[in-house]
Each structure stands twice: as structure tokens, then as C-alpha cells.
Length: 335
Picture 1 (cartoon, rainbow, N blue to C red):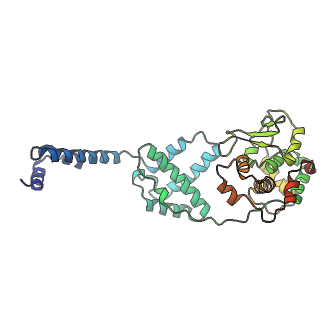
Picture 2 (cartoon, rainbow, N blue to C red):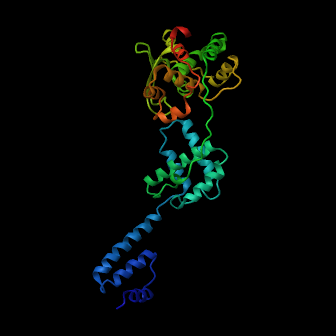
Picture 3 (spheres, rainbow, N blue to C red):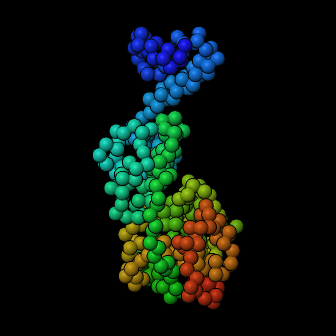
């Protein structure tokens, strides 16, 4: 008997099951007596298809997957979580994206959404793609989807700006402003830590005087104070050494509470009309590499996971002289 015709005639007489996969399973059971070995193999294949169809129904919407992704990061800082929520909320504003089952979101759909919501800025587009990638990664772990379409989207090139660093005269103007305006005296210690230890502004705002070890001449950035979550210890060099003579109560914060207002006032009093983000870390990194010629050590002290970002975004050695780098790390110059 012809197998295909037998399958067709059997399909007509079968009562209609609830799912197409069940029809195929029933067909293999009814026709198994014709060719037992063939239909046993076919039945295994059909069961696998049925399982795949069942799995395809186990999914959640993008909004639900994104909320779970944030929930999995509750250990991160509130500012980081707020940033994640902001990007996810903008994604969900794209028509139909929030309610779409995450298993069925395609590469083109992700690309169109990212372009519509974040295409105005290469930086925002890249950051949004990173956030989207993390949402799909968590969804895959939960079995809500099997692929991460964010991987396949080309990232736009970010136009690199010229890296600025401060010269010795500009550094002295900042210290002078701190010491000659009583309102800015609380900013001197944070300024020295940012300049001569490369500590990020948000990190230095979390530090207490107990994080400085006078005997070891180190400042400790614990994992819960670090931007990247990794702990590190940075030597007190150059102008940061004088902090060892200014130690205060261990439980007292090093940075003042009205940071934003004082930080703006400090730059104004020091004569800066423009200010590039991270210029203090750029200065520390460039001076450090010029003075010590040790990129792995610099990477460790700055808290970078790899040296690529450090080399492309933080260093400017073009006009930096050895004499300036040595002067930068000479403590007596900054007392």
C-alpha cells in the first residue's frame, strides 16, 4: 500500500485534535502496523516537533522579560538601575514592542526599534543595544527565547573626540581655588584623589576617611564603592600624599554633601570656561603611563577590565613631556 495515500485517507477519518502536532502523532500511531520501524522513527521526529511547538508557546512579552532582567540586577546601584529602566522604557514606547512575545522578536524588528528610538545619537544607540542584549540574554536563560537578535545588529561608529589633559599650571589653579575660597576647602581632598589616584567622581563621593590606610599609603575602593564592581587599592602618590597629614574621623565622608554646586564653583573659580568629562582621569592616566611605562599597572589602578578602552579613550601622550610627568608625581610640588 502506498504510504502517503494511506496517511491522507487516515487524516480524513480522524477526529480533529486540539493541536496540529497531535494530529501527526495520531497518524503515526494508526499507521504503525504498515511499517513498524519506519513509523517508530517518524513518531520520534513528530514528538520532537510537538515538543518544539509546546516550547514555542512558553514565552513572555518584551516588557515582562525586561522587568525580569532589571530584577536580576537588583544588586546594582540605584543610579545604574535607573539608567537601565530609562532605556527600557524608551524601547517600550515603540509601537507594539512592549507587548510582543520576546521569542518572536526578530533582528529587523530590533534594528528598526533601535533606529527609531535611539538613532539620533551613536552613543545612545550603542548603549541601548547593550541593554537590549542583556534583556535577551536573561530571557534565553529562562527559556523564553532561543536567540539573541541584538547580537546581529551592527553598532554605529562613535566619533572620537580629542582627549584633553590638564597641564601643571591648570592643576595648580584648581588647588589654588580650593585653598583661597573657604567654601571650596572641602573639595581639596576629593580633587587630590581624583587627580593623583585616578578615582572616578562617583567613587570618591562614596569614600570615607577609613578607606585611606596611612601605614600602607593606599586608598581602597571596595567593590560596593566601585563603578565596575571590582575592588582595587591605589597608591597615594604625588599631590595625594599630603592627605596622610589631613586624616579626619574614619566614619566621615571625604567628599562634601553639596558636591554638584561646589564642583561647578571650583571649575569656575579656577578659570575653566569649558570642561571635558573625565579630564582628571585622562590626566592621571596619561601622566602615569608617561612616568611609569606600565600599562597593566595603570589598568589595575584605574579599575578597567581591559586595556583597550584605556588606550583608545583615556590617553594623550602627544605633547606630554617626561619632565612634566615626573613633576606631576613629585609630592613636594603640591604641598
